[in-house]
Amino acid sequence: MWAFVIRRLIYNIPVFLAIVLMVMSLLRVRDPVPGMMGKQATAAAIESKRHELGLDRPFVEQYCTLVQQMVTLDFSQEMWTQPGMTVGEQLRKSVPISLLLTLPALVLTSVISLVIGMLSAFYRGQWLDKLLVFLAVLGMSVSFLVYIIFGQYFGSYQLGRLLGRPVFSIHGYEPGWQNWCYYMLLPVLISVLVSMGYNTRFYRAVMVEETGRDYITTAKSKGASSSKIMFVHMLRNAMIPIITRIMITLPLLVTGSILLERFFGIPGMGDALLSAISNNDFPVIEVFSSIFAGLFICSILLTDVLYAVFDPRVRLQ
Image (cartoon, rainbow, N blue to C red; front, side):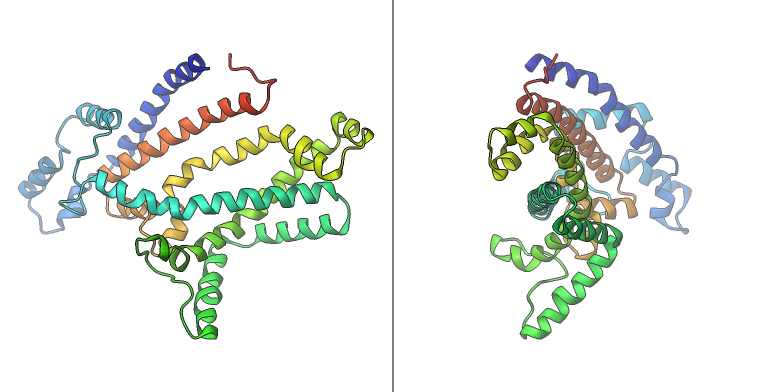
């Protein structure tokens, strides 16, 4: 297994380097310094600023510096928009906040959607299946922004008026576990509602396919209970697509939900990346994008390993 992991990591090194190269090239299509300095800036002032930011160095040298930073995990470079604050400090500040938002949302969405999908597949064609499919399609048809707006209005404003006190906050986040429900519960619930429709239909399709397998017929003929067939036989044999679905979303745990963090004022990684893009903060964009690329490559590798763990028919060769 370790030989497979090392080999796959080596194969993906050129992919990672190509992604970093593409990000740096796209950022430098337009010189950001004149926009930062304003219309009244002289050519000498612009050139001095470019030297200060390191943009006057050869592109290859800048590229090698960024790769070295990623390999050594040296994120001590200062942010352009916040002098005195390094990219590493921004990472340490924003990543835990994003995890507090995305990790509970992923767990709740996966568990609830999987259970609903299994129930819908098990009672296929009956009224329960039709009701669950209808609700899933209805949930998929509503825009993410609509959920956010309605959640802020009814879940925070109207509920607070009804109870006479604020229940959820729609702006910011104060550190501390005791503040999680006040600041994070509403965005987490919105994220679960948005994702449940897509995940439920996916898991239902997977489980419906499994209900027609020979091993299900054999289990029924041996007198296995419905709960054992559903939660033991079907679930274990359907782990390959389930793992794929979950692992695809793993990199998003760190980057966070940009829309939720922006609309709720949560200072997570997604909000920090969006602010950096708006302000042309190259060090933050380059490091955050490189981290996202590395996480995505690692998640694909971890997916292959989990295939072999849950399905003995898969061999890492």
